[in-house]
Length: 237
Image (cartoon, rainbow, N blue to C red; front, side, top):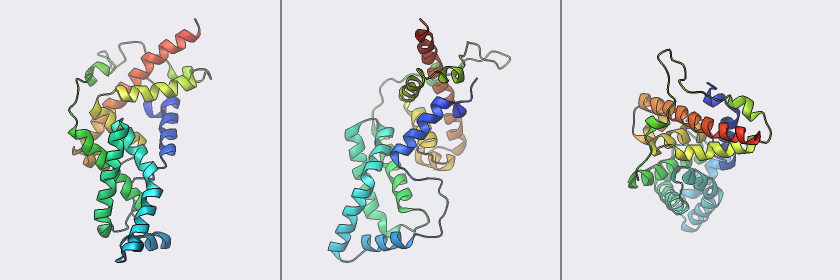
């Protein structure tokens, strides 16, 4: 079976989605401290002068609202809820700006707050009947091989007329996953949180996060395989 993360269509969608969001690296690597420009901006945000602070907050919103909305929309799949989550995130940012320690970029810190705000709204939803992940996973025989035929997606993706359809199908297939599995896939493969960060955001153990992500990737590949085999066959009809 084609390895999911190495597959062209999947990788292309992940890369394009990440680039379009302009979200920073969330690997939580410590920095040497904020730059001079960011330190000056933080000083304005923390100013005792209401006019200076208000101006700084307006700039913070202008500079970050678009990328924060992209993140929230990916997780919530609802524009109104995404706007509400971003509003929640800005409130959290404003309330906690005094405790921001500068060990990461301000934008990275805000990205994590946005993810958490969106996840809180996601948890509050009453879930409709979802497809079971078990029904989406590939079936293996006693020798460990796929029990059903799996098309060669790399050869399909080489055909130029298929590439846009494959990229679109990846996006659609992600949305077909059960919510828990769709969310871990987005956090790890699109938002690029580490396993530890994603597990903390979802309130599960790192081992559980790894297992859930593995099953999400398997299910996603099966969804893509089945639909793209139909598309590929249709182009030769």
